[in-house]
Image (tube, rainbow, N blue to C red; front, side, top):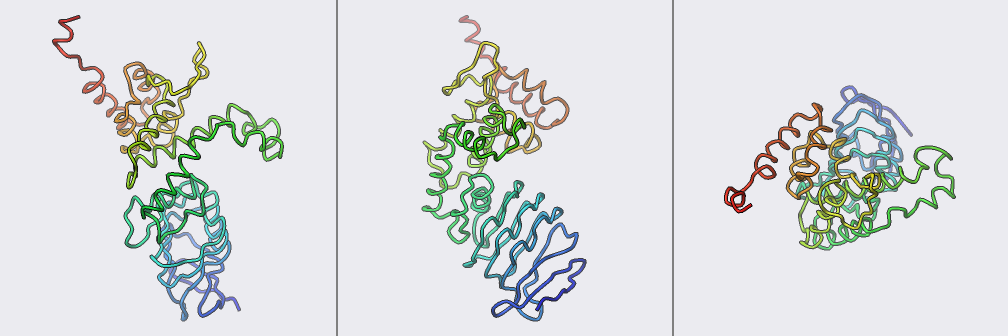
Length: 309
C-alpha cells in the first residue's frame, strides 16, 4: 500500500517495505533535503528512481535507519553536490549517481573529508561503482584500489573506446561527439579532472603516483616546458592544453585549483601572457594570483646572475 505524507514543503510517497517503509518518490523544492527517519515506522529504503531528476537538490541526508538505496535513486540530479550517509552497511543498487556530474562529496560519519571526496569521484570520474564502499573508504587497501583504477584510466590510450562508440552508433553520425578530435579532447579533460582531484585530496598518495599526476597536468598545459611525449605541429594545432581548459572553464573561482596549477609549474614565462589574456575579467581573483605569482617567481632575477651575464 502506498500513501503520501507532507514534511514541511516536501511530499514523500511511501510504501510498506520489510520491517519499515520505503520512499517511493519525492516532490518538492528543497535544496538541502533530509529524509526523515520515521513516518510512524522507520524508513529503511530509498526506492528505485526515488529522487530521479530532482534538478534543484544540492544535498541529501539519509537517515540512520536506512538499509537500502535502489537503482538510479539519484540519477540525473544535475545539481547534486553532496550525499550524507550513516556509517553502516547499506545495500546500493546500480547507477545510483548516473549523470550526477557535480557530486563532490559523499560524507560518511567518522570518515575524513578527503575520503568522502574520493568516494564521490569513484562513481563520477573513475566509473568504478565497485569502489563505492562507504565503510571502507579511506582505508589503506581501498586507497590502493582507488589509485590503481586511476592509473589504469590515466595510462589508457586516448583513442580507446572511440571505434566502438562509432561502430555501435552510440552517437549520431556527424555530431560533435562523433568527431575524433572532440572525443580525444574530452578524454584528456576527464583525465585532467581526475589528476586535479587526487592531488587536492592526497591522503595515502604515494610519491611516485603524485609525480605522475603532476607530470600529466604539466604535459597538458601548452607552454609549460614539459613535452611529456606529446607531438606538436609547427602551427601548434596538436599542442595539448586541457589542464588550462578545465581550470579556466570549471574552476576559475576555486583557489585550491589555480594555486595547485602554479605550485606544480604549469604557469611559466612562456605561457603567462596567453593565460593572463584568456583569463580576462571573468576570474579576477585567479588573475590577481597569477600576477602575484609572476612577480614572486617568474619575474624575479638574481642580481649577481645578471652581472655574470
